[in-house]
Image 1 (cartoon, rainbow, N blue to C red):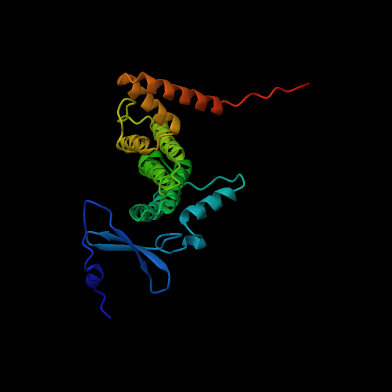
Image 2 (tube, rainbow, N blue to C red):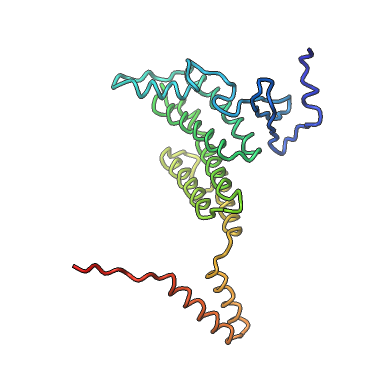
Length: 261
């Protein structure tokens, strides 16, 4: 059997302008994710560690260290040195490639799960790294991870006909707030409050796009019709629209209950 992967890549050209990924059926009967790269491809498991390994008998290294942290029972937690951080970084990189592939495949739930995993890795290292430089090797990517997490949440809320635009807006706004809080906490010399980072710009653009896509309520449509009627000096129509708005507003106002003592 040939080990040459050229036949696997036939018809699947690498495009540097976009992330190309696909689902395949593995020889073990399970579903796999393939991510096209310039020199070939990555093949990943859809759940658990992307490489399918169980480090130290746990689903992930993160699970191992979190279990160790929970069971330490007041004993000092061992500092994460360069070797430990390198292992965690290798795991985080695997998750990074998988959430890129999952986003291209519009599997937003998987993106949310995998970005959360990597943010938890960064938080773990921040708590236990042997020095601040090692911690920053992970923390510097928090804004990007949080942006992708918020983006996937918003896309998940607006992915079908039952779009929940308010929840999508809330997810993007919370992502923005978390990124800004991160920079304020770490007081990075290159960050200034009046400068928008790339991650913030992505979420702000998505917010604007979402607000434009959001269906208008009946009240909003009536108000726009009223403004147009006034602008065109169609006062009879304006009066009719104004009355309709008042009736609608009265229906929305619920009477207060008075407790009888």
